Image (tube, rainbow over all chains, first blue to last red):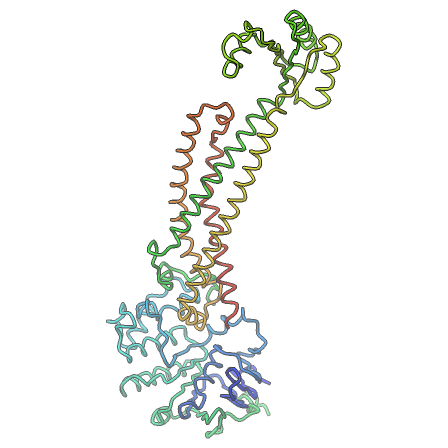
Length: 243
Length: 300
């Protein structure tokens, strides 16, 4: 079903909470390595639910999901952390740990991965400098503005060089200049091989990344305006060349 | 490839769980539990020592009473019995208890100069055997004394204290039961505290999970926190409990009772008592770990 080079494949995935109607229905798509995806849709279309499935916060009610070549649905719970470490997540509500400083929030993924303390300070400092928060390194989230919190959340998501970055409205709370800067960071990561999925309702943002692919959710159903999500998955480039 | 560690490294990892150490009840609850456990353990050890000491004192001891109202016949039987006992290979030593000593023992109940008042006081012989006084040994001695000292009655000294030993053994079991109950109560307190902390830190735990943290890493955070509380509480409890034991020991020592004086605590007993907070610490760590892992097992 999933090619060796595919990052994620959803096959007829459905999700419902309790006995409510499905918030996602028959969602099928494949994410390829090194691609840049925008996930769009109106509020309540199911973007956040889809992202929750992508960053392994939720199991679907039905269907199949493969990630990094393995079946996520039947995977034992104990193996999920190893997969989550290959992801970077920017939450819509930032989800910074309130009693930790900006520095410690950004350092958290490295500490979880077991990186030695002596090897943490430089990448964290670099990342804080990149998002323009060096002077706020010791500040707690409560004393940061919404935009600053968002930048800390993004720094935390990308510091571990994830293979798949999932961002839920990452530019929602920053000014246009910072939004563009963050988008350039995502593009730079993308060029390094990270697959990016950005959920946004900002249509202007879509035009800022020319090579991006668009996934559109409408009341839980996925459409494919750019033809990027053809399913069954299109052959990988090497397979196409060999055919 | 990065190492797959089971703990979050560095002192700053502790900050993931905000603490209100010493302001919270955990160290105090553990201190009280350890205090009571130390007293119970010390009591149990003291009772064991009493039983052991008394048993070793009395194990090979026999008392031969010559119950004869006629003073002449009594003296004759006593002498015959003494001679027979001295030559018996099972007997280590024989001591005829002087009349004055017997009268001194009876003085609190019968007053001065019992013999002069015409009260027939039995002659007594204290016998020490080479081994413990078994029923067969007693039967053999009774059979050998019967023809030469018909008024002789032989009793194992340990049999007199059998009801006391039995009561002490019951008290020792009660002390053991108390220790088990206190350990269970302490573990229950840890379970409640950890569950409460799990609830209070639910958001933080979820974020750590979503960033790739595993249950064992989160459990280690709780174990560190509970471990510090248990260590502080345990040391305080050990100090309080040891103080109470020393005070009680002094009080009992003042009784100058032969039986109670055998209940002193040895160095090895104090080592056992000192290990109570360490055992409490281990119990708290295991309980915290199991509670966290079971609690987290219910979430994705």
